[in-house]
Image (cartoon, rainbow, N blue to C red; front, side):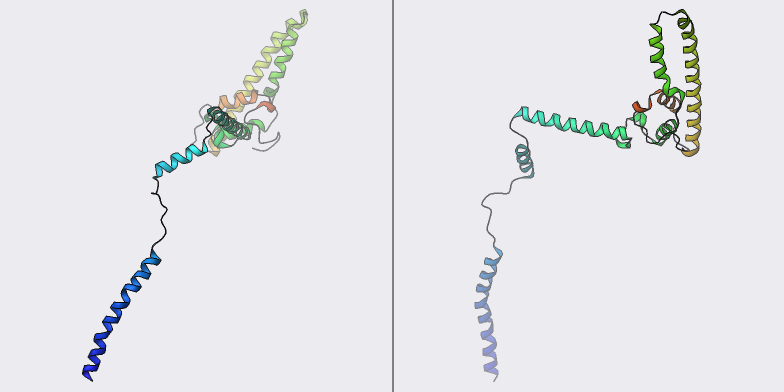
Length: 202
């Protein structure tokens, strides 16, 4: 009995050893994948190839495409500036204080808004050879300038006070001049364009 058990145990390693090469060969065949037949290109080479493929061979065509993209980008930014989007505004128009000043000026119809129309009328009257008109014009012009200056000073002071209340800690430097100059502009020509209607509460 002992001899037969020993023989069986001695035969077992031989069978597993005989089976091992076949299993290893099968596993090796399953693990091996078909190669690409060429070395993997470097990242810099791949990027250079893609850049050459995307760029047209004709330099004039490439320049034309670049100009078209720049033109479209400028148009998109200009339209965003007109709408008052913060990312597209110039530095002098950015910030909540400047937005408050624009809204405050745009919320009412003011005499300063029609100042430019008055100047056009005065220029027209200058060409009329009438002694009465020539005598009155200087006085009318002085009155218009005084009204415009007084209104601009009042608007600037009001905006500065309102900004200090709503945005404490924010710089109000130059806000009075900014508000007064916007009040002088014709409403339709203001840039950024008004986002509040006359009569709105600010």
